[in-house]
Image (cartoon, rainbow, N blue to C red; front, top):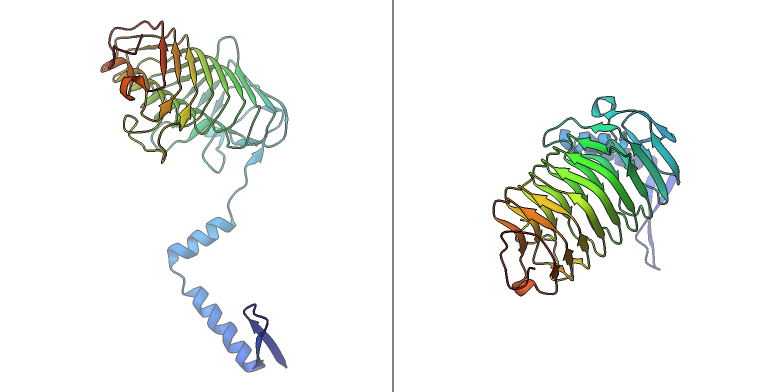
Length: 303
């Protein structure tokens, strides 16, 4: 038996005829090369092939470890904790679909604690027009790396209490045109609320106490992370009627790549470095209006 083997895609394809014995030799050589893979490479290949897919959330959610991948209304019916299991990415609940309504009620969503933990409620990039709300007494999200994370756009988020998470309470990452109201982000390892590099978000009626930084917008030198962009990475965010007290560094801070930010009616006191801080010279294009504070890094433009 002869097998015709073609190589390349040129118009003058060259063909070579291999005998059955030659073909068998090539198969054996290929098998030997595969067996010769390092243990680590082979393990990585096997792990990729056997990666567990996230479990689909039912409309009534009574345990961690699921992903919402269909538009609809979902309700958390009990306290959730990481001991019930996690998604493959280490989250409690992931939102992958758009136009989702997720009612967390007054339930606790508790993580394992420590630096290796991931996200309590994770709204993935590309998930837009989602609504996530806690109850009147707020949903309490604690013990995660980040309590609540969104990379989506045009979302509405309210009545969320993130407390004692290792890195951040609430993070908006590349998220635009979201509305965050009635929130609390306190006792977090680094940021209470971090608007990392999103634009046109409206944040109001929130409290960020006893963190390193209470409310932080942008990601440049002050954040200790460069978002690979100059001006305008975090553009046009409005922060209105929020409280940021007793944080070890800044109460409310705008990094050098935050622009066209409006900070209005913010109350900040007892913070370790500055109650209010703007890393742009003369505040750049940012506007500070009617804020209540004791210390700031630029008294000429911070009002």
